[in-house]
Every structure is written in C-alpha cells, then in structure tokens.
Length: 128
Figure 1 (spheres, rainbow, N blue to C red):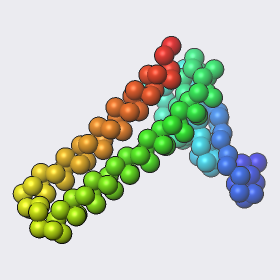
Figure 2 (cartoon, rainbow, N blue to C red):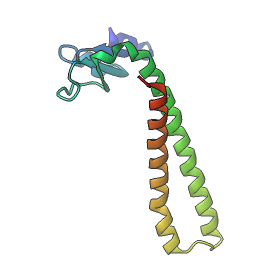
Figure 3 (cartoon, one colour):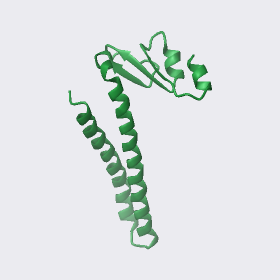
Figure 4 (cartoon, rainbow, N blue to C red):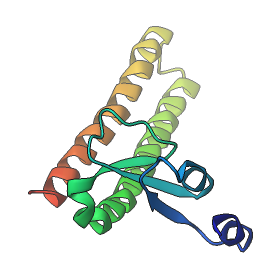
C-alpha cells in the first residue's frame, strides 16, 4: 500500500513497532517506530518515539517543521558570513591568517546557533 501511495506522488508517514513492519517503515518517506525502551531498540525507521510520548506525536511533527526553519536560517547565516568574508578577501582586506581563524569560527557559529535555537524552542514547546 505504501509503494502505491509513493507511486501516486503522495508523502507517506508510517508509524509502527519496527519489528514486523520494518520494510514499510523504510519505504515510507518518514518512518516512526513506537517503542517502550528507545535506548535498546534500533529499527529501520527515521525516528523512534517513546510509547509514553505517543500522545505528543502531533507536537513532534509540528516541531520538525520548526526545526526545518532553523536549518534554513542557519544556511542563510552561513551564506551571509561567507559573502561578507569574500567581499573583504576580494578587496585584499583579509589576510590568510585571519581567514584561517574565521573559517572554523563560522562553523562553530552556525552549529552553536542551530543547537541553542533548537534546544530553546524544544524546551519552550515541550515544557512538560
């Protein structure tokens, strides 16, 4: 059934236990396994949801949209950072040593932004 939906161009989210439905979970666009012990279980799925948190599934899906926005903002920050650095480099105002220092700093900046923003929005959204 999932293959039929995929052929029709529909986006498929499959929720299962990850044991007898591993093929369906992996062939869907997004596969979510429900498990009692999420640390002892590695199914063929994109995500593992603790069974006690199943009632928050809609909130988790909504949070994934928020996370996607955060990732897009981080790409924009990275592009702006690189264009500003390129502008200084073209004008000869950026020495190679400063560029060598700023390059890893840009990675740290973007990773820090994504980590802190995702953590902050996650804590705000899932207060309980």
